[in-house]
Image 1 (cartoon, rainbow, N blue to C red):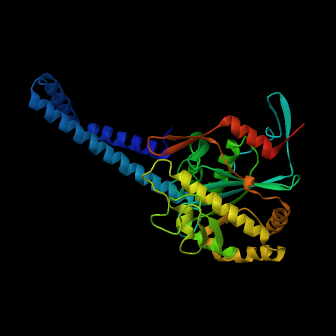
Image 2 (cartoon, helix red, strand yellow; image 1 turned 45 degrees about the vertical axis):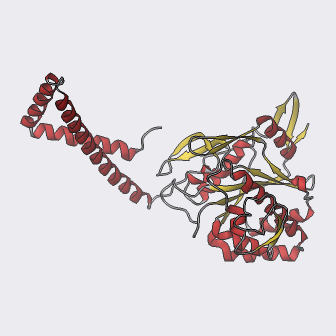
Length: 382
């Protein structure tokens, strides 16, 4: 990966300082060269070798300190200057039209243009969600779900995407410079943006690329503080607990139990997992799927007026929510939700294989199963 401009400038400045020192103090430079020659002649003496190594280490450390100090100053000046300019990273991806007509196993398929896709993501941050001037080091997307609303066939599907899925995501430098696509955990797509619209668009792009380039133009992203608000929008949700992961700390949450989640239990139910246990995110995804199923069933049980009023209720959680959906679009989506079929089969989890990585668990999607899912959700045979 190429070094950013600030680091390059810092190294150049450090080099100039060293050269200037040798020019102004030639005697010192000559003594240094003579000392080095003498040291090489006496390299067979053990204690001399150790002293020389210590001197080299000290010299290297001092140079590194100088370089880092100048680099830090350069980055600071660069970030200060960014406050007066508009960074447009995040708008560079264009899915084009390559997704519209595809061939699979000799059969031709055409994209169903009456499909609406909405990306939902829950990120692991607290407090107000807002964009920052400096890119990177933002929250990670813990929960990723793609909502697919097929108006033509009157059906709705919710696809859960493992946050540890290894796929192409776009990285940005601190100043918003596009560094291209890298293979890593899909949850980091939000991390590498600005914590605002760019992060959301970057995650949309990553999921789009995973699903063969299908367009994803709408998103809803929330953080940890939003969970009680989301739960209260529908007056609380009763779920069937799918596993016993939380039973030790919450005895009522044993596998198969019916639990009505409130402000005190919604966050641990959707977020908690044993980080010391490999692939513990799988159990958490099971609970998130159970909650999504119960939540959407309750939404469908509400009348049109109740659903429309939900939009106004969302104002209370505006600091913990980011979305590209407008009120008029929301009203249209409400009508689509009410007319769509929703069954247990509507909730889908990507098939694939878990692997232990060097730092984090990794998930690799089964490409054949993924391609068949893409055809089923988004395409029609020509």
